[in-house]
Amino acid sequence: MEQPARQYESGAPAPTAAAARTLVIDLEGALLRSELLMEALFSAPARMLARFGAGGRPGMAALTDILARAEIDYAHLPYDSEVLNQALAARARGEKIYLVADRFARHAAGIAAHLGFDGVVAPANLAAGELPFDRAFIARIGARSSGRASLKTWAKALRVYQYAKNTLVFVPVITAHQLNFASFGSALLAFLAFSACASGAYLMNDLLDLAADRQHPTKRHRALAAGDLPISSALSAIPALWLFAVVAGLCISPLFLGVLGAYLVTTIAYSLALKRKMLVDIVTLAGLYTLRIVAGAVGVGVVLSEWLLIFSLFVFTSLALIKRFSELSMRESAGLSDPSNRDYRITDLQIIGAMAAASAMNAVTVFSLYVSSSAVMPLYSRPWMLWLLNPLLLYWFGRALMMAHRREMPDDPILYAFRDGPSRIAVAAMICIMLAAI
Image (cartoon, rainbow, N blue to C red; front, side, top):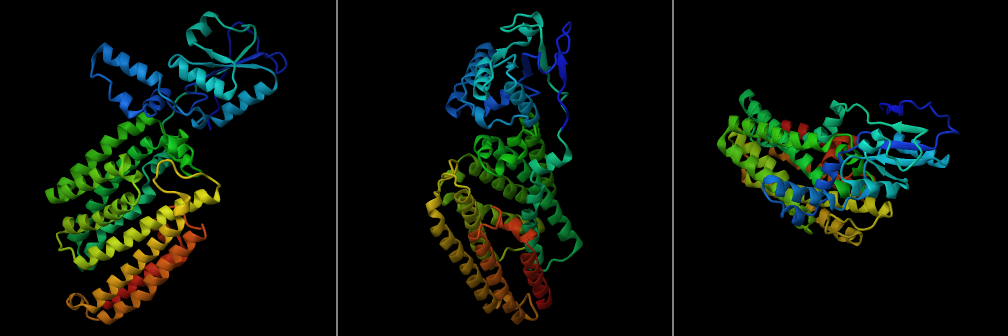
């Protein structure tokens, strides 16, 4: 971490630890690893922002007043731990501590009160010497030079690891046995379009969930919640990502772009409202996963099998339920209360687990019916081999449910399948069996 600049007022000797009496800290750029304007913007209730007039000085004055009165959760803001530790050490030595802030005086005072500091001074007053303390010995922790977020931080914020979910667009190519360069090229472009679209949606979701994420044991480490990525940078990246997705979608086909648009609209609706509706969020998540498969079929130009569609719906409903089960069980283990941004209670764990198991078994049943049907004959020369997939499916679903029950699964079972050794072996065996059955 870059060391904050420690400066002393010109004309005053550098104080010793014993002589120093006052420490002044720049709020933005030193103590706060975020932008106070953006924090206020995303903390203001929507009903207040709706009153903001368009354009003109009255409109801007109204917006400024709204942001000044926004209820910011000072306890969970991303503070610089090193600067905060220096402040606490100064407090332990009996020094006074003041924040330096040139805007949103109410919020600056609220932060100072929350941290137990002595008050707030404006930069102009600090320069003019109009201070509520003795000017003789002042140590200052000034704003650091702002650096760009690293590639690692961007990859974390864009959820590059989540791109594994978008490999679902390749499923129709494989199941329809369209194993050629043109089909894989179209599927790859569809993969990139969905990845860019999803990354923009992830950024938007993180902006809307800032307050809830900062109170979450693991989500508080997300780039935006932790202050590793400026909010303004995320706001600039979202339209750029969606523009790339639109261009890539148009290169495939207008119909594919329509499916991608449906995915984005549903994702936005999920972030704004649907994720707070009990079971509606589960159906929406399952639909979003299935929509990737639909997009893959549209992008490549193959007919989507109704068997694959029904099987996918049951599989992804089960995985969405396991995801909620893992989130709730984690909160139970950590002794946390019911989530504020989800319409579930920790006491719902048993019914959610039962529904996840039932949906998984329904998926296996649908697959068994497919293998028994006449639809399998034109595609596979050895369809009997597909029966070997049933025990593997039962094993993987059972393992996922068991690991979730034991609190040993992260909150996303699809990513778990890529990281868990036995799951990777099971998936690899399934692929080998499918290829051998062709």
